[in-house]
Image 1 (spheres, rainbow, N blue to C red):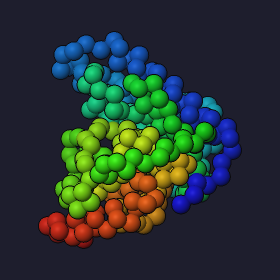
Image 2 (image 1 turned 120 degrees about the vertical axis):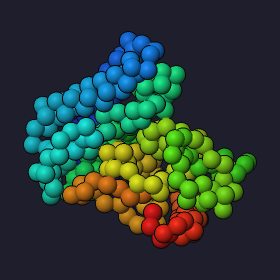
Image 3 (image 1 turned 180 degrees about the vertical axis):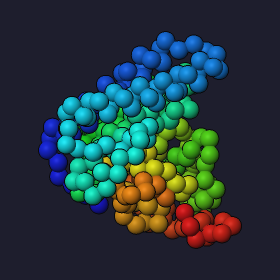
Image 4 (image 1 turned 45 degrees about the vertical axis):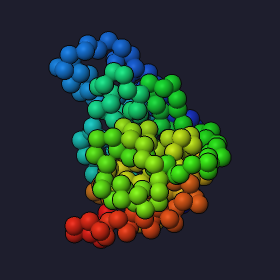
Amino acid sequence: MPLRPAPTDDHALARDLAVRAGELLVALRSKAGSSAGERWTLRDDGDMGSHHFLVDELRVARPEDRVLSEEGAEDLRRIGAGRVWIVDPLDGTREFGEIDRTDWAVHVALVIDDHLAVGAVSLPAQGLVFSTLEPPVLPPRDTSGPPRMVVSRSRPHPATILAAETLGADLVPMGSAGAKAMAVVRGDVDAYAHAGGQYEWDSAAPAAVAIAAGLHVSGVDGTELEWNKADPWQPHLLICREELAAPVVAAVQAAIRRQPGGGRA
């Protein structure tokens, strides 16, 4: 599933916006108090502050393009539009509100004619950004131990846990989808299989960066993902090293069939 060709300045814009939104969030977080109420306020302020920054910047830089944002009102004009930016202003809001955690992200992606073209994922608390402007170089796989699968720290899907047992894989809990996907890109883990469903803003930018890095990206059933759908729900996602794609797909599908009402990711 190659990326759709896009102008270099689109790649540069995505990276710049992901970095600058991240800087905004880090600054906001540095002023937060420690009480439960202040943390809830921080989460809300982070979500909306980053959303307004990204949407306003895109409106100026790409006034003819459409935007799909997790925090924005639905704009049905995006359906069938040639260029649609898909953004998650703060992926991992829960982790953002926990001041000692770094596994949260900002996602900026561009879909051209319903195909992924551009992506940037910043991990602001770690001072890192990964983008299609300068595709990451995938490090060699460490084969000295069992494969490692990254999973949700708060709601791991039973099928993923069963699949890891089948593969003899170690589970690595982590926060945001972007952080989990970039853990595969960085070589910290070997696979990210999400069978529980998410939205296009959760997966678009991470998928674009992973494809640019030479990783396998599909649904957990091996099918190609679709973008800019009328319903932005994305039933499942698999990002992994190419050599692990077939065994992970087989293990996850077998695990899903073992679930009550199995056969559906």
